[in-house]
Length: 376
Picture (tube, rainbow, N blue to C red):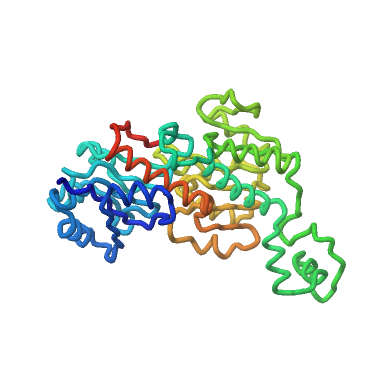
C-alpha cells in the first residue's frame, strides 16, 4: 500500500479549520517545522532526515505568511540542493497576496506550483468546505488606509496621547496648540502646533493603483468620508465613475490639487522609489501620504527629508523600507506620522480564510486534477 503524501507546515495554520480537520488529516501525513536557525543547511538536513520517497513523500509545503523568510528565502541554491525533495514536491502555498523571497524561475524549472492568496478566485468553489468571503483582504486593508487618512485630517491619536499624559480636556487641548503654557487660554481643539485639524469631507484623494484593494479604499473614502476620489493606473477602469489620471509623467502637473495620496501599488522594479523627491516636490505641502503597498515604493531619504522640512502634513505607513525594521524618523515623528506594523489585513477572518484557500490549493493539486499556477 502506497504511503500517504506528506505536507510540511513551516507556519502555523488554523487547526480549527474544517478543511484541516477533515480532508488534510484524512489524506495526508502532517509534519510541522519551526525554523531554529537562519542557516538553510539546518532546514535541508531536516528535510533529508524526515522525508522519504517511499514512506513519507513530501508533496506540499504550507508556507503561511512568513514562509521561507527566516532562512533568507527559497533560493535556487536550496532548490538545487541534493537534500531538497524537488522530485516529490508538487506545490508550495503562501497565505499572502505578495510573494517575496522565492526564486520563481527556479521553482518553475522543477515544475513545482506556487499558490498565493486570492479571495476572488473561481478555482475555490468546488470544495463545499471552503466558504469564501469575496474581496475580504481588500476590505480589511482599506480599513487600515481609512484610519491613516482620518489620522492625517483629525489627528485623533496624537490628541489622545496628549490627554493620557494630561488627563484634563481643557489642559490637553491647550498644550497641543504649542502656545505659552504660562498664559493658558481656551482651546477649541482645532488648532495644533504644526497644523489645523481639518475635515476630510470634499477633499480630493488620489489612489495610486486601482486593483481590488484600491477600489475598496476608494469606496470607503467616498462613501465613508465624503472625499472626491481620483485614481491612476495604466488604463481607465470602466467599473468606477471616479476620475482617471494617466500613469505617466503628465501626472506631476496634477499632484498639487490632492490633499491625500494613497499608494496601493505592488512592489516592482517600476514602482521602486516612485514617490521620490521629484514626486513630492510637485505635491501640496499639506499632503497626507499613505502607503499600504510596498515599503520601497517610497524613497525613504526623500520622505524623511520632506518630514524634516515640514513639507508633509501627515505620513501614514503600514509597510516599511527596511522591514521589519522601522526608521527612528518615523517612530519619533509622533505629531505627523502614524505607523502600523504591517497589519492592514491582519484580522481573524483573513487569517482563517487564507489558511483554507492555501489548504484547498494543496488538496486540488495533490489529490485532484492539475491546476494552472494561481499567482496574482
